[in-house]
Image (tube, rainbow, N blue to C red):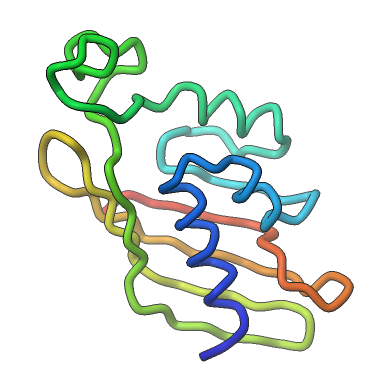
Length: 136
């Protein structure tokens, strides 16, 4: 498999651990994101932090701090993300991966998110330059 896919799966692994620094280490400094949780194009780390901070937190449904009925972010919390089999194209220092991401919640049905990730090889290392998510 391409060297691109391990970068993408490492991003989701870090995300699932709540490791923002781990995710950020895989993002190109000029990364842009269309996140399924936000209608706006994310063009800065400050915007990304705001979207992250607005997500419901995980935890048992009986915990009032994380219960969907009382969580200030509203809605069920994510408990897992699983990227599906990708289609990857590489051209020199640019790569595109298309796949469906399954998002599981502590309450309710999973969400399927059609995802395209663009990567750029920078000083020999693949970094994520753009992510576009679209809920199916």
